[in-house]
Length: 253
Image (cartoon, rainbow, N blue to C red; front, side):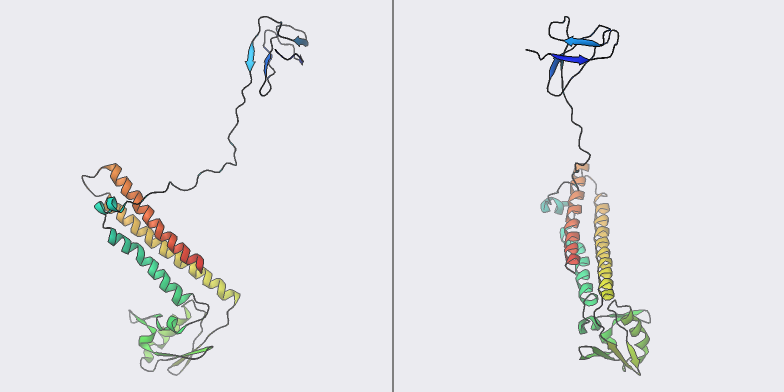
């Protein structure tokens, strides 16, 4: 049975006036010029309308982020790529990042950080302990005796000042006195900035290795495009695991 309803409609000649509500089927037909019409199921002919509501997609619906997870098939990967070499090239920037964090990003300056500090002299690189004797006198003072290589003093001072350890060495003859500064907010911020730069450098080195191996892969002959694409995606996925490891090391700082 139909529900009877009085509907106010505009006077329109030869037009069908519809009033459709959600989940409701009604019978409406109007050929009259009267502004009022009692709608019922007794009018013939009649047209039946079924209200069907379409829902628009929410603008706030989040899209799936990132690409689908790629399964790394080492057997397949090894057929076209030297997997051991690839892993070694990916791992090397990680090891460098760890070393740099230990040497340059400690809140307290350590003897090890100074001993392994790189000093450029006459176009060659040395570590500071090769040029001088390093001794910690007390928790707030480190001394470097440069009497064996006094000509390296200016280069050593420059390297210490640019080490990122917030150090300001003072020279007395062939001896360098290095006060260990108190930890300040500015020093912490500088360490955080340096840590980010080191992470970005590590990430870029991994990406460079990824690009290099993919270019070499595409030069392979007698290999289908589908296989090349699969291996390429696996190389990218493998690189991402090392980048994630670098990210974890960076976040821990």
